[in-house]
Image 1 (spheres, rainbow, N blue to C red):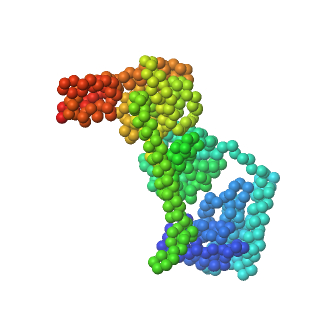
Image 2 (image 1 turned 120 degrees about the horizontal axis):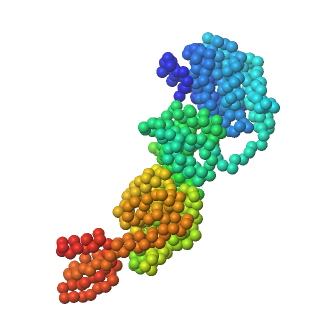
Length: 588
């Protein structure tokens, strides 16, 4: 693609100029004669400056058209560090025939740290001479001196000498640079679609970045109704973020939504740092936190599903040649091979997770046979579920003021006030914009909430975004089919919000840290379990074996007595199953 000021240039001529991308420089050649002749010809025809970027591998990576006196030069994303040149030389034309470097050329050479800046004089479409400028090692004030050649004849262009000068200059600059200081943390800029820098989602993304070990050095936002399909934030905002990242010396840009592969690729072309979206960041945190075999497999599965549609190929450059009739040609490309390998690994992981899920189902069946009720702690990440588990059971699990401090589900025995034992399960925390691949991968783990008898919703009473977080938890529970489960809400961290009102029934203020409100919480859970499995009596005719099987499957049969007309069952059933049993009897 031809960049820059192409207005007024015929489309057919722009297509001809695409030929410049096909010219390659051999090793030891600074500027191929074919490239210089083509630049001169096109400059004479469009009467404007033209610049090309040439890598050390000899590939033309950019062609830009300017006006009659200047050409806009883009920042180069190939820069390998502050102690090196950028690895690209710029060759541009001067339509007036004068090959000497201008002050603008010299300034661009310093600012963009080019390997070299070359000016090609062009008169009436023919080259006159070539001038080349090189940087030298910085002086005591940190300024880069510039060495410039006299106008060189194209017939006797010292190609190898110019290339050696680039290598020597790079070595001198690297030798003069102070030893690099290794950063303890990566520097990150956070950006997203929001109304302002204090948007809750952006603040949460900052916390996620800190959890992953990055240092947030800047926050930016774009107030727009919909995402830009090409660059997520818009090309103008992307250019602004590029300057912001450079000014803050950022290592990566974190974006507050999941990007498409095209959006990521377009942003990487515009912004000279690593691009990471919210989904990739959360997956990275989960990879850090996973401890069990199942947890590690679930994270790997989510990462592979995320990567699969985002693989980028290299055309047919790394293809396998086919052989035989009808199979000659590029054959299977490296991209296709990578995709096949990922799909095979996904299938293997899914098979292993299915086996682990079968073992979990067996454990659930055993718990049902022993009539042990299950209570699950659910809630937004960092609401204090692990702290509450420790306070209630003395489990001693990791509990930190960080997002996703614990990942793998933990089950502990809990004794209720009436002496009944139940199992208390701590599940993985929920979060806004939870990646779909992560929900799919962790579905078997999240199903602990679906199969629990009672849910304890742990909420952070001191959280200013509590209504939004409560909505996220409700949506995730509904998607799992656990929205209708009996619930008790534990308003945790009540010591940080002493004036907050509990509100509705079964909303118990507690403090896992201070140990307050725990007895009231256990009493509320006990009441829910008792209401869930209230004792019922049903007389089932001997001919209705289906109803008897239903009671054994969904209830806890305490007593059976045989009467003249049928079997009298005393069974623990919840209200819904009791009504179903009565309906079965009526329909029979």
